[in-house]
Image (cartoon, rainbow, N blue to C red):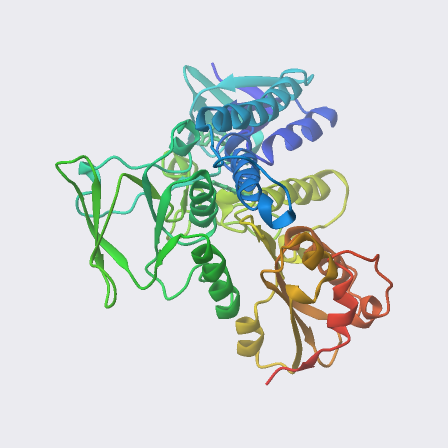
Length: 460
Ligand SMILES: Cc1cc2nc3c(=O)[nH]c(=O)nc-3n(C[C@H](O)[C@H](O)[C@H](O)COP(=O)(O)OP(=O)(O)OC[C@H]3O[C@@H](n4cnc5c(N)ncnc54)[C@H](O)[C@@H]3O)c2cc1C
């Protein structure tokens, strides 16, 4: 006999647990199904553990730079990878424990551990149980893509999940994929002491961003000794007799082969929708497997919603959490929040970080609108000079007719934080002149923003 609930949530990622709390508080008897770890990617194999590792890598980097600040450390800097991993495990483990306890303590919530699969539009199988509900919420996330490449099945390779178990220093880490995940691992392992090569098939790193941003990121990484191979598509992999992994490249310049001791694939993510039985439920997906949703995150099947990465409308923790807010507001608060109200924002957590909001310069140009642009090097920021961290720049774009900000990139010290001032101005739908006249605290990185906004020029 099927077990009846008011609501079923599949996946305890970044939307599921908060949604479970809201549904149960609203009096809905709810089932939550999770096949692996509570907290999903962000907590266990994504944001939290990687940013914890980035912090260790920065400590090593700053220790090496100690003499620049007049601080004397005797002897070479050593990194204890077992301790680095142990620290990461503690921080990530605490987050996992917190979500687990939170969920386990929820009244009105029944937790099922196992893989969920639809058997009909409103029925889901997990292990031996069949659950039914009028409302079903899918929060199944995504996993690392594994490309179809000759020889890949002959070699050992790592992805963001298996990297979490690494407690040793790879001698030479070859990373395929020069986007966000690949670059964070690249700098981190270089700072731990590995030789690192990043292989990217496109013309630049972080291809969705502007060329000046991408170029500056390359220079920052190369200055630390990371080898960056652009315009280099991998065509085959091979395990050599000495245990090394050789990656053959299709490229016009540089060696046609890169050989390393370890290989990390960071070539994008694919949604966990292929083994969910969506066809049994008649839930539509697009050609890349993402669940098709409307602006309120409803699928084509009434009473079924899709939240988080699996709906293809955002690939971040903050977008997944915002999906929860949108669904809850529409269901319970008579507040018609929608996905298209969201302003794009994200960060690349290399050091210095890149904070990005809204449109790129390329997109503004393509839109054909009349726009203003301002760009200043981080070397103009007093705080950055004092801290000896002057790499990068700030770039802001505004609409010349409405004076509204269109987008920004802040690559530099605290760029991941500073960019929020601009983001909030965009959410307030206020003209940039508001911030231009604001008095910011000295000495901070944000204090350059009014100056930058006072110096906007027509985008030619
Ligand atoms: C290395 C790395 C670093 C990242 N860093 C950042 C960052 O700094 N900032 C940021 O915003 N984002 C970052 N991200 C992205 C972020 O982690 C994800 O966008 C976010 O976790 C997606 O959340 P979600 O709610 O969609 O699903 P997830 O967090 O992926 O959770 C989905 C859950 O569903 C479960 N599940 C899947 N299928 C089933 C099934 N059939 N039955 C039962 N359970 C199922 C999974 O086990 C999982 O627990 C990073 C990602 C990676 C890989």
